[in-house]
Amino acid sequence: MGRRTKEPLLITGGTVVDGTGGPPSPTTDVLVDGDRILAVGAGAAEASPPGTRTIDAAGRTVMPGLVDAHCHVTFGEPSSNDELFWHRPTGTSMLLAAFNVTKLLRAGVTGFLDADCIADLGPALRDGIEAGLVEGPRMSSGLNALLTAAGGTAGRLIPDEGAVGYAQVVRNRDEIVRTTRQQVKYGADWIKVHLTGSLPNRSGELTVWSRDELLAVTDTAHALDTPVVAHCRNADSTRLAAECGVDLILHASHLDDGALEAVVASGAAIAPTFTFLTNLADHGALVGAATGQVELFRGEIEATAAVLRRAHDAGVPLLCGSESGFSLTPYGHWHAREVELFVDVLGLDPLEAISCATRNGAIALRRPMDSIGVVAVGAAADLLVVDGDPTADIAVLGRRDRLRQVISRGVPVDLDRPWPERDPLPGEQVGLWSTRLLTRDVVEQ
Image (tube, rainbow, N blue to C red):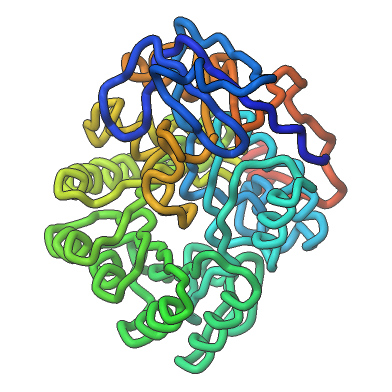
């Protein structure tokens, strides 16, 4: 696609929400030159170099771009694990990822973390975006998630050894160390561990790693200057992750006092990712999703949220992640819903929630805090101009029709193009003969 020429930009007259949690600054100018904010407020106009393009933001909000800390850009929106693992060749998955990643940018996402990818696609896509081959946000990437033979959320679809889809099964400590080193060698920004999994005849997810196994990951990764992210869907796994040095905890479901104490002591961050469960609970019936456990999901969110609010108050960084990449969270539609849920479920005020979706996203991108996700001199030039006031109505961030400008790396994104559409690829989705058994009783009824 090539890179568009970067011209200096002066965004004038908008109300700046700077991403730090501080109060909005009305009628404030922002000067951008290349991938850097040069000036904010008084003197920005006078500092503008020749050839500066002016963007009138009067009556609108200027804020940092969103960072989605939990996005599966290589998954291709499957409706089941069978479809995810068995119906997309690697080449097809990369084509879909390159097609879909631009949707994130056009929805106001200027950075994201894809912690576990199909095959080895993530680092290649990240590098292609940075080289200008593919249009997309800044990206940090893992490779395959590390699993024990007990599996993860996909149950028995995970083999006892080897790799399938996004999963790499590791059998012993030597394999854990070797695989972690190999992933760093081949470009992983993060190492992901599925610390919990679904097992037959068990409710919820159980911890399926031992302390020694997890320490083998964290010690090896940290020795190679690489952080670790873990999928944790019970309190025991969250506590174990924190005690073993995991840097970013996904879900932290049913967080309890012991787990909270461990997280606070460790300095780990949490990305709860309520969006997927909430979409299923609120809207799953509209698209034929199995909704038999809706109340269970709602209970998980409520129980987790109560302690997560205490974690936030204790200084634990909370990140916003949508888990986009499935049929219930298609790309470009739900990236901002987690910000809303931080307000509605956690009880954060909108400025706090926006900070979780912007400034705190620097953790997911492996950038120094305040170098990205903020409107400040010297920070990266990733900005939104929003037609509305998200501090009064946080839901405005989820409305693409209210985005007037998305500026990525100092360059405005073309929002006037038609939304990307395509035809299905042969064999892309599971072809069902039926959704229920055609018994004689069904016919006779």
